[in-house]
Image (cartoon, rainbow, N blue to C red):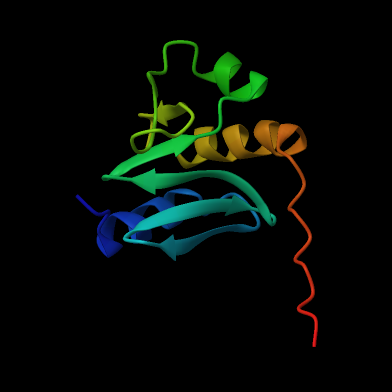
Length: 108
C-alpha cells in the first residue's frame, strides 16, 4: 500500500517547527530529509526513522521494523501529532545522520 499524499502533507505539517524538513517521493513512498540528510521515510502510511542513538533514547519503546522486505530495520514513530517532539527528534538525530553522498558527475 503506497503512502497517500494527504498523509505526506500531514507529516510535513507536523514537522512545521523543524527547519529544513522535506519529503521526496520515490516509488509511491517518501524519503524524509532533514537539512539534506536522510532521516527516514514514509512507508505504508507509517513514519519510520533511522535507528540512531538519539532516536532510540527518545523512543525507547519504538517498534523496529523494515520499511519493505529486505531493508534494514527502522524505528516507527507513533507520536505523530506532537510537533515539539518531532522537532526534538529531528534536532537530536541530525548530528548522528550520515552526510549526503556527493553526486557523481556524468562524463561526456
